[in-house]
Length: 316
Figure 1 (cartoon, rainbow, N blue to C red):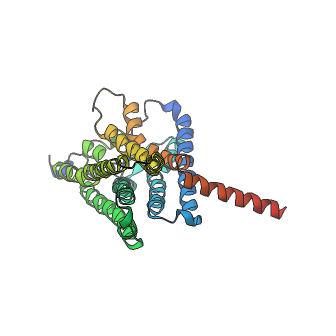
Figure 2: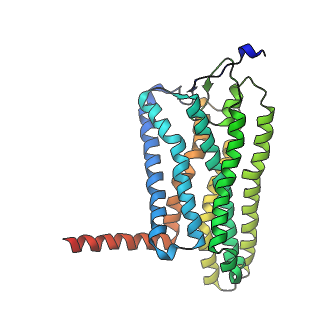
Figure 3: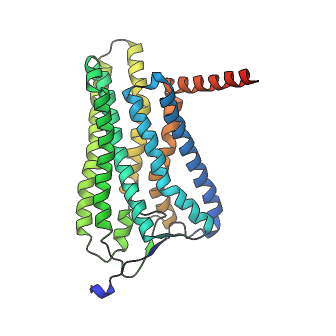
C-alpha cells in the first residue's frame, strides 16, 4: 500500500456498545458502581496494612502492592468509559489512546508477575519455614516488588513503541471501549508481524511463565501440606493460601477466557463485555476475597472500627 494512503489518525471511535445506544445510562451506573467498590475496597486493604503492625509481613507487603495495582488498573480504563457514557460520545484522542494502552499493558503484566511473586512467598513460608526470614527479608521483598513494576513497564514500553508506529488507512473505529494493542493491530494497514512476534514473546514472560511458576509453587505447597500430620496444621496452612489461590484462578482464568475465546460467534456487545471483564472484575473482587476470607484482615478492620467507635464515644 502506498505511503500516500497511510495516515495518522487524531482520534479513535469506540464501537463496543454502539448497538445499545439507549442503555448507556444503565451501563454508566453499573461501571460507576464497580469502580467505586474497586477503589474503596482496595484502598481499605492498603490502609489496614499500613495501620496494623500485625500485617507488616511479606505476604501483606505484596498484598498492599496488589491493592495499589488494582486501583491503578481500574483507573486506566473505567473513568474514560464513564465520561464517554455520560457525554454520549465514544471517542478518545490518539495520544490518550497510546497512554491508556501503555498503562493498561503495564499494569496487567505487573499483576501477573506479582501474583507469581506472592505464590513464591507462600511457598517459602510453608515449604521453607526455617529459612523464611532469610528468603523473604525486607531487602528481598523490596527488590521483588520493585522488579514486578519494572518488568511490566518495560514490556509495555516495547509494545507502545511498536504500536505508535502503526498506520491507519481507512478506519479509526475500534471494536471495544478502551485502547489495547490487539484491536489497534486489527484496523491497522501497517505490517504487524513485528507486533505479533513481540506479543507472542511477551505472552510467555508476563503470562505463561508467571502462571506456570505459580502452579509449580502451589504444587510444592500442596505436597508439603499433605505431609502435615495435624489436622489443625493442615487447615491453617490451607487458610493462608486460600485467598491467593482464588485470586490467581480469577485473574488467569479471566485472562484465558479473554484471549482464547472464539473470534466469531459473539455479538459485538458480548465480545466487548468479555474483554472488559478482564480489566474490571479481578480488581473489584480481590479486596472482597481478602477481606472476607482472611482472619488477619478482618481482625485489623475490626480494631479500626472499634477504635473509631471509642473515639466517637470519648468525643461525645
